[in-house]
Length: 286
Ligand SMILES: [Zn+2]
Image (cartoon, rainbow, N blue to C red; front, side, top):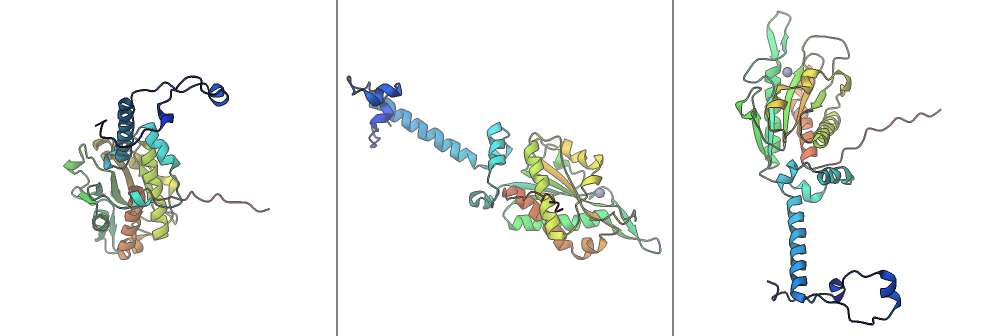
């Protein structure tokens, strides 16, 4: 390996570090101590190999599960002016889980018509949204599992992201009972990424649907969602209540495509490490 390296080794590389003032001012009275070339070639090759290995691992899907300090720093320090073109191209093997809330278990919230008949079930709305999200993400090249509420696959489930889709009550509570909520898991090994998924979901869903984010009414039920503790702790998760079946019924049932698009774009924002602009701080003009 070392003898076939055609690259001449620059002399500066072979010098041991010397105190700077003497090197600069005095003419060299004695020849610089030189290490055997073979050792240098090997060291250089090793250095390049280490560098390549580092660069390579930085872009593999596995690095999405890494939670070391450098990784977190990189995440924080990544310029958010636009999507990184390298990360932006989807990698076909990346897995995403979508839970259709209540599906396979119960109907969730229900709506009744004036005759007292059930005319809308949360589970059906959740399933329709989840199916549309699955199709869109698959079209982007991801491997997407559509999961039931208590799906056996959730046990130790490992994916880049898991998002559970639910909807809020069909009771009329008050005029404020409209809009969406997002919560991410506190049990994850990587809170940083979980917060990023959360921020992506809120930002994209709000923009696309024009719905209001209910930051203050996120319940313990959402934060301690059962699936959060069943899955692999490396899987980044969020739960979204895409709206209230009462006041948001129209957009949920008639613009389900838009609702699903909001969820999809939130997930893609996270997967592609896209920028999330911070909420503008209001300025007060006297
Ligand atoms: Zn629900």
